[in-house]
Image (cartoon, rainbow, N blue to C red):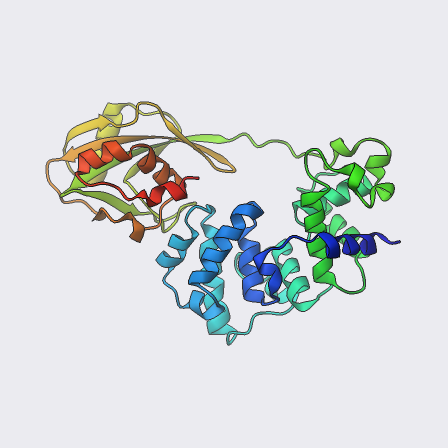
Length: 361
C-alpha cells in the first residue's frame, strides 16, 4: 500500500476533533492557521473560539476597529499576525468584492500569508493539490527520506516541497495535509516518537538505521539579544499613564512609558532620560521591582524594571486610565501588573481587575 493511502486510513480513524475541522469556509480556516503559527493546538482552540465569537465572518473583522482586534488577540503574542489579518480582511472586502481568493497563487498575495498558510487554505478549502509543509510534515519527511539538510534555506524548501508533492494522493488533498499534521503531532513526535505504533515505519529510512533521533537536522540556535526595558509608573488621580506604541513588535499596543537600552542603566541616567523626554522635572523615582522581570521572545530577551515616578507638573502625553480592559497590552505588561497587583492597588488606591490573571498563563 502506498504511503498516502496508509496516512489517510490512519487519519480517518484517528483525526483530532478540532473546531475548524467542521468547516471548509476559507475565512475560518485562515483564522485557525494564523493562530496556530506560533501557538500550541490546545491553546489555539481557546483563542480560535474567542476570535470567531467576536468576529464570526470576514465582514465583521473587516469592519472592526484595530484596537478591538488586538484586545481579542491578547495573550497570543506576535501581534503583527492580528494586524495582518485585519488588513487583509479589509482588502478582501474592499478590493476583491468580499470574494476570498481560491488558488494558492492568489492567496499567498495577501498580507501576512506565507507558503504554508496559502497551501493549507487552498488545499483544505478548494482541494488544490499543494503540499502544506509545517514543522510536523517537515519532521515526517526528514525521517522518512533521511534528509540531511536543514529546512531553513530557500533552496531546500523548494526541494522538499517538490518531494512532498510527488508523494501526494490524487484526491483528498486537504485531508491528506491535515492527516500528516496530526500524524506528526501524535505519532512522529519531536521527542520520543511512537515508532512502535507507526504504520509507515517499514518505509522510514531513518528508522531502519535506528537514527530517527537525528532527524530533522537541527538548525543552529540563535543567540538571543538582551535588551533592558525601564518603565515608569506615573499616577494621576488614581489612574495610570499609558502610551500607544508607534512601531516594533508591539505596534499599536499600549504600555507604560519606557526607556530601552542594550545595557543596564543607572537610576541617575534614567532620571535624566525621562526628564528630557517628557520635559518635566522628576521629584520621585523609586524602584518597584528589585529583580528584573524577564520576558523571552523568539529572537529577544527583555529584562525590565518598573519605577514609581512623580513630576513637578502633569503636562504629559498619553492616556491616564484605570480601565485596562479597553487597551491591548503585551504579556510583559500583564506579568508586571499581576505580580505587583497588591502594591499597585495601594499606590493608586484602587484594586486592579482579576482579568490579568488569565492573560499571564
